[in-house]
Amino acid sequence: MSKTSLRKFMLRAISFLSGLEASGRTFLSASLSRRLHARLWFPHVPLALGLALFGLRNLHPLLTEIANLRTGAVHYSPVQEFRALPEFFHDLGKGPHSLIGILEILMAAGLLFRSRFAWSVALVLVSASLGILIYPAGKMSLRAGGDLLLLAGLLFFRRDFSRSNLATGTLFSVISIILLFGYAIFGAYILGKGFSPPIDSLLTAFYFSVVTMATVGYGDIVPKTDDARMFVVSLIILGISVFTASLSTVVLPMMNDRVRHLLMGGRRKMSRKNHYILVGTGGLAANVFAELNDRNLPVTLIVNRRIEEPPWNAVDQVVGDPADTQVLKEAGILDARALLSLLENDGENAFVVLAARASGTEAKTVVSVRDRVNLARIRTVRPDMILAMDVIGAQILGMALSGEPVDGDQLLKKVLFAGDDDPEKITEGS
Image 1 (tube, rainbow, N blue to C red):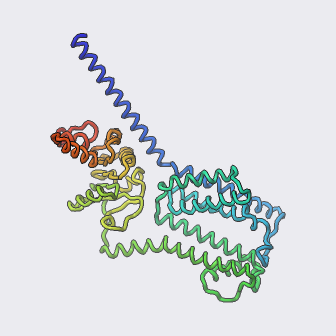
Image 2 (image 1 turned 30 degrees about the vertical axis):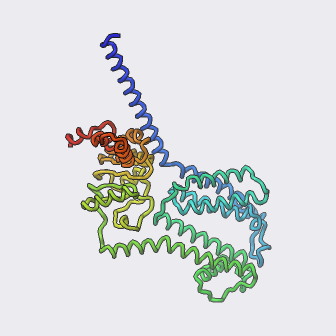
Image 3 (image 1 turned 120 degrees about the vertical axis):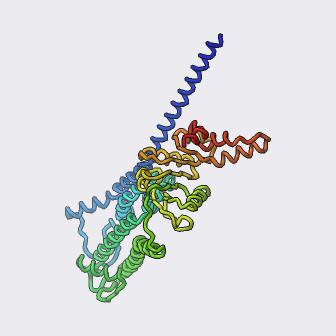
């Protein structure tokens, strides 16, 4: 084979390998993009739908009881003792299970917003529903298997439900108060003969419920049977608990914000323009923030939960998922100078960069890489700069121990700049 033929063959081989590399890069980028879009609905939407469907299933006995009431097959009237109530209230698979179903449907709405509170309540409700289904039969059934699968899903994806905000807390506080009043009014009416004088109307039951939960206790209506007394005890405990929880989730955050505003001397909200968006609160992120703060550069921090500890308590914070384009836009990504994704997980950093690209911003993107295996994968999402401090430290140590000369330019080219960028060309271009 002549030198000319060999040169042509080598050029074709290089061109073919470059095409394979570009195809692989495109495939990986598309795969990451699909995973990013999946995060917009998975896993909270499937889990919320599953919880709502199981809630509707558990509501079936209640719907049947309502149908019987409408046809006159069943009639409710005040009784003196709990044991005189219809079977619906005594059977765990009917009354209690229907109540669980109502709460599951309400908590499904909270799961759609990735609420941590809704996830916690849903976990308790599904566990209780599973126990009710297994207890009478003493073995696993198809219905119980569905609840077990949902319970496993909630536990497996627990980290995806970490949001907590004032609007969600207010919503669930209102729902809790409405359910509490329903329990109080219906319970007081159905056990009406256990009081003196008897409660024989819903209006009287409403009056008694308000007086009891307000702990006023006029003494004009008093329980005279053990069941009525236990009901009043439960009503007082639930009333104090629900109203206290409502105050802690709604009023206290508002008061804290007001006090913080006064202590900070009325500091105005930062204008999110020509600023730096920081994602992550680890050691590298803290050091980067300190350097930016020393230079009086504006920083906006994206976190899953608001941080009140220093040094982050004085930073402009946006609560949400940093891989969500709407959260990035709220943080001012369209007017930012740069986005610094310095999370501990390399995959999450890639999602943040893809979300930034999807937002249409012209801000520079900087990501950190902890594992050298992920270095090539991170390059496929085309960040403007890669910070691989662990990788560069390992390479410098390896060179020093083996006696090799430390080539700073080569190290920068490998682990500081994205893609095939050359540090010298970037320096000249700037």
